[in-house]
Image (cartoon, rainbow, N blue to C red; front, side, top):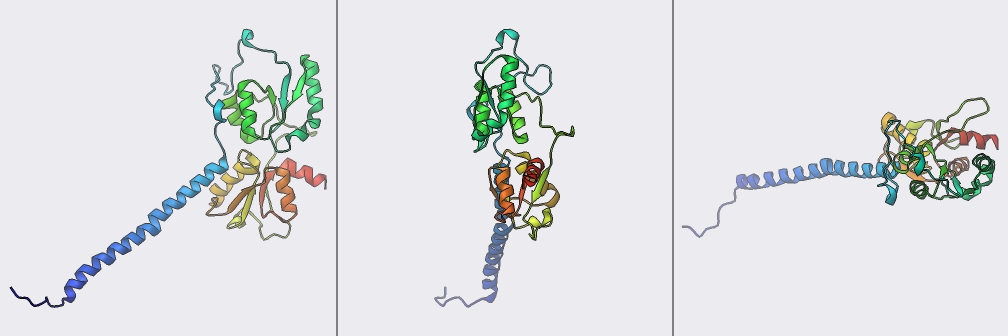
Length: 264
């Protein structure tokens, strides 16, 4: 057995280095493709979940309502289980400025009180979740909800929709508009790539959900990877922000937009 060191072998070096380099490149490829894509997918999924809002109403979400006739709303209870609340509590769509709506609904409350021979009390709600919880527990009796909250209200709180807004011409309904400041480079939804979209609130159809789905399905634009996002918490706030050039783009309800245009 010789004590001399083994001769240098280029072949041995290549045989060792090449697999190591291959493994390194393989790991880099996995990290830069699969793992990064999985991370991006998770972020986008989380953003979509946050933007689409909650699907339950918190502690009262376990309440179940019977629907024996299959009309997709809660059945009326038997006559001997019906109650005559005193006072009858009424509220409109929850918002930070909900208390200001009482005077707008005074005529409706007066008509309800006269027809039913009960006192009618207005109760403002700042959040939809609080409004839904009180409806489910019987603390709220007649309420208005924005379109996006109606499915949750029906399923979790026993809400039975009876009417919607109409107009003097006999028509009803509204559309979702995406608006941008005058003179903006944004000329259509595809121009929202890498821009900031200001939604109204997560439970708003025209102010969030409809735009979110439109951008995702038709224009392949997703929150975070396609555009930034934030909330204004009000259609009026979004419209005023766009008019002032402080908001790059915002989805809003067409009827509220037209009302503000008409008001100057």
